[in-house]
Amino acid sequence: MKLGFAICGSFCNHSEILKIYEELSERYELIPILSENAARYDTRFGTAESLTERVESVAGRRAVKTIVEAEPLGPSGAMDVLVITPCTGNTLAKLAAGITDGPVTMAAKSHLRNGKPVVVALATNDGLGASAGNIAALLNRKNYYFVPFGQDDPEKKPNSLIADFSQLEAAVLSAAEGRQLQPVLC
Ligand SMILES: Cc1cc2nc3c(=O)[nH]c(=O)nc-3n(C[C@H](O)[C@H](O)[C@H](O)COP(=O)(O)O)c2cc1C
Image 1: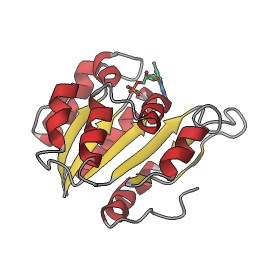
Image 2 (image 1 turned 45 degrees about the horizontal axis):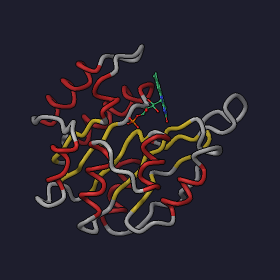
Image 3 (image 1 turned 30 degrees about the vertical axis):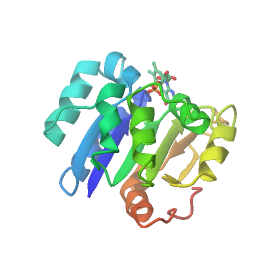
């Protein structure tokens, strides 16, 4: 299976996601896609350069980092499934609103054109706040699937939601068969 693997600017989750990315590289052809913010910001969780180098060396190909590079992914049939992980509240809002202003949203639009599945692995502190409506919109939209998600810290961050990344591969395999992995709430 050819798996588009889009990484957004939920920087604190990059190290966990990269471990999963490396595991998946043993079983799938990976097409790394970086949001413009993931590709340009150095944070306390790592540098943009090291993120880019790591995804490119594992996949053995250049990362998709612009709208122009993302646009052909759909027409060329480059991906069977596109997973967006971690998906920020920002990217989620754009997907819900049909805004295509960066490589991740362009990859999704280009891929959805073919009626193929997009799998969203959330990580956002406002999942039960400002992002709640956007989650609901995509739960109810054709060809979108979610990695099961839940509250990560109900006491200190009552609105925060995060995907159970350990279920990412299972969610991708289900989505490839047109099914949402259940239970979606964990
Ligand atoms: C250190 C750091 C961690 C962040 N973590 C998150 C996060 O987990 N979830 C989220 O939705 N936004 C997070 N943000 C904010 C996003 O990076 C910001 O909304 C950005 O515009 C996202 O761009 P993208 O969706 O194009 O990747 C974080 C920002 C910083 C600097």
